[in-house]
Figure 1 (cartoon, rainbow, N blue to C red):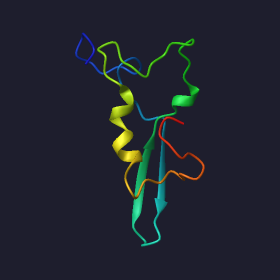
Figure 2: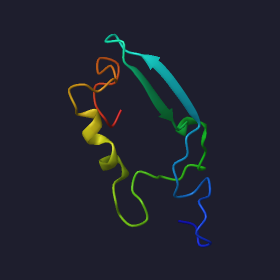
Figure 3: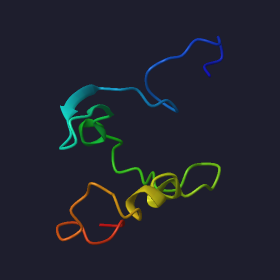
Figure 4: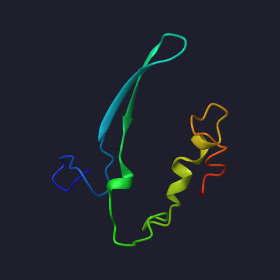
Length: 81
């Protein structure tokens, strides 16, 4: 939380930049929130490891490893790619 206890967009917060709604093959509707990381620029700063020492990839790696991961692993065969 920000020092004034109000949520702010930017550093240390995840904010949705887009929303997509789609119908699955089983006719169920789903909504996905998207954060466009590729539009952000940090001037060459390495951000994989947080200042506290946490490897940020551990937040998402378990999702990549799931059998139902939507990422085409023929195109992106490993998480570090």
